Image (cartoon, rainbow, N blue to C red; front, side):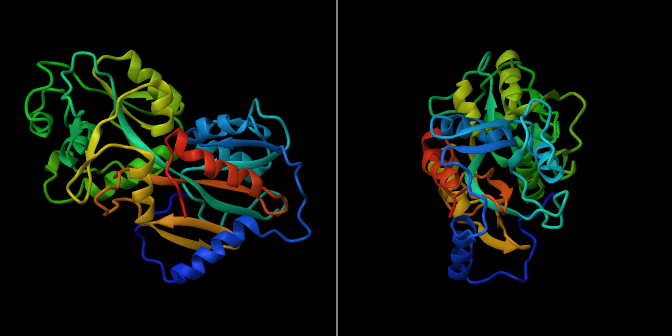
Length: 342
């Protein structure tokens, strides 16, 4: 189901037309729509990256949301069958991996997909035993490619030392925490690694060859955890741990995140501004009937762009009206650590 965001597309409209079409998908509904009550939007499931966002919306809207992971959320949405613990009926889903457009809802119901907010996938870490520089831990592409490929296994590695102007640990083994479930965060991360970990300057041992998708072939020594919250908890519980978790969850769990070297050669901290800068480098694409995604985000080029960024996608049935919910989500997002989308 994964889309490769750098895949050439022949059906792109002009930026003005695409923007107008995107707005039309979100706010223009036909007279035949079934109007949900102003404060009730039903039940949903999907990406854990939006857990903080949806929790913040509960003061304005009545709904339940099960952070089951992108894969499980999409499965429930297309089957119109809520996952365990979620009331019926299901009315929406969220995924960090856009759908292909060929998926069908059981019974033939139409659906809409819109980019909701920008997410930054951070490399959060446990500081125990590390001497972190005053400006924060820096990781070059060679270093984080090596860590996530399993070839850099100790915090005293010479590549990490070079990034930070000296040794940050004498002997602290690295414990990588990764998602054990079908995850859009894994899709965003693996899409990025599949691009940058095959570029000049990345040692052969650190070249990414573990696939792209919501699940990939991780080294057996990595620690598996379910959900972004599960990854954050495992990082907190293990000395020497580092793992990938979305910025909003990281902030909630009060974990530090590494500054990452981006395509422009700048070490960038994750923030709503740096995520938004990355999103602006993408291309808005409309496809299918009422589907929108943002392509070309695997390695954003802007100097201020956070390199591991993507959009999370909100899906709902096309006979329902979610414009109030979507508008409120976009307004709330930056205060919780998310970026903005067009």
